[in-house]
Image 1 (tube, rainbow over the protein chains, first blue to last red):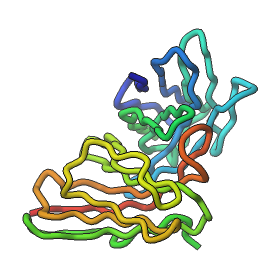
Image 2 (cartoon, each protein chain N blue to C red):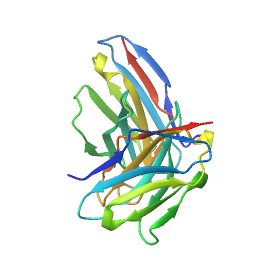
Image 3 (cartoon, helix red, strand yellow):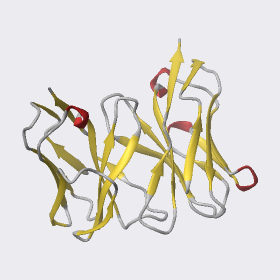
Image 4 (cartoon, rainbow over the protein chains, first blue to last red):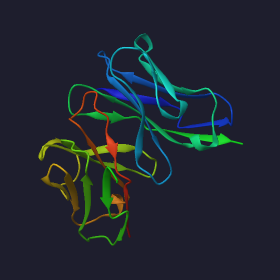
Length: 112
Length: 114
């Protein structure tokens, strides 16, 4: 079964530090890959997505992610965390069917 | 100018009652979804409609019945509510089903069953 795993249900960083949120998928066929962010009491918003082409994808709010087929990974990074980045982050995979599957989410805390 | 809207935002009700949640999108999308998010933030798809036709029906109790009167609306009706139905329910839409199309989410409806 196709699935997506987010390592670490909770990540805590200091303001200004590097943010690294991990996502791995399990399938023999590379999926379409997405990162969504959920701020408290809100719906999910798309941060970025990978479909084809360049494997380093830039998104909103300074986030980027790199698709690494050999590692079946799509980790999300941001060079310098802001307090406003505190939220829940979801990695998701999709294929050429009707299904998008979400990871369990990673809660990012940013300390002053 | 909300893209995907849901009503109500909060819903508190007693066990055994029947309730509905409404969803509307003004993006011109063909596909709409319902998700359930539990207290641990796990997001599970419940239903997906494309052009008013059901295309995904995950294993949910048949007390849950989606209704799509037109492409812009996908409502969720829940019969005989149970404590375990307490969760946040999200509606979403996309241009087409699956593939590279991102989904746009509504603000959620927090359902509390007492």
